[in-house]
Image (cartoon, rainbow, N blue to C red):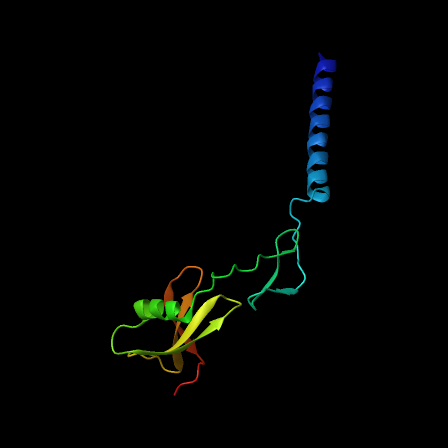
Length: 139
């Protein structure tokens, strides 16, 4: 009976050692948590915009297809819908190809001290929102 109990403890000890060894192996020698860092290169697209590298293989993102870019008139219509409440005005827009957004300086009826409002229209979501660009300096 004593030999059976000793054999049982030996089996439990060997089992625990196997579990510990497997855990050490998985923690130290598997590639589950590899983080990739891509070079900061840019590829110039036919429409004049640029795309960067991303993903685990660091491939260049797809260039936008012709006609995908929102026109200033389309963006201005969205800006008027989301940002202008009445009697307010928008300046001509500026397109940011990096963020794929149109920016319209806005003359809004509401103000914030030290801030200049702009209506930002996202090309991807086709939504507009007011962006208060604040310097922290009071006028």
